[in-house]
Length: 370
Image (tube, rainbow, N blue to C red; front, side, top):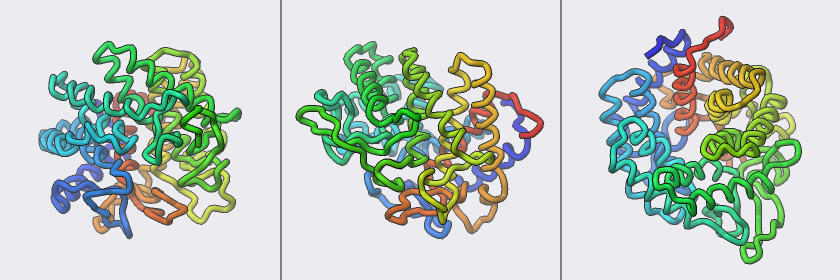
């Protein structure tokens, strides 16, 4: 392993300590967000979408430290989500199995892990609405979420492992439909599209967690940057690379120089100016995109921005060294309109922060500024 500069190495040490505390204090349970800095742990979440991020974080800490304890914990927490491979009630199977079982398979080529990934991907395809050409959200066959761009790579992966053109076509169609209806002309994104599932006709935008139905929810934008980058990685279709670049450029143009967006760029004078989980997702997605773009200048800008985001997140304003605060990153937001998990830690924010640190470690090109 390369030696990461301080403060990145310091952040990994803090994250390791907090994860060890989490699994010792709440054994076999999965948190989603904190309340006053304490993990809110429940066996059933809103849509049960967060269970893969703890196991995924443990895999990442193992990769960053090679501490064998984290390997054992990562395998254990991955096994805890295995039964979800046949869950037909959510659109979030990618969030469950990409950080856990796919990473397990990537590292070991384990035959059983391969089969779990395939089965989960096949289950997710059952959400496909052929009239509209999209995978529907848990809300029903009329609903398309931008979040699903982060779950569709599970289908791409299953298609690749099986050599199954039907799975590949479903994933491809979903990305094209999302590009057509949820990505606007200025490369901002809508959170949700509402369709007539009988005809496939697009009806209108809607949001669950943004400022307005026609505004740009920051976490949705970062899901899209990352998701379209992966869609290009799997398909080599230029439309997906161009989309990812446009989405990333929107993020860069509308976010302060420190790299951390608000919950929604359209909200006037937000009371909570930071959404650290969106920033962590953006950092990881930008590292990926910097390695895919064919424009050297874009590659440098995307990588530099990813490092700037990490540098900010590693600062005392965001990284929680206080033992009384159980999460890793402060200033995340789960659901602002419902005021749930606002200005707190989130398990996905912590996961993507660690993933961005892992990408930084893979890159190894650190500027003097960062």
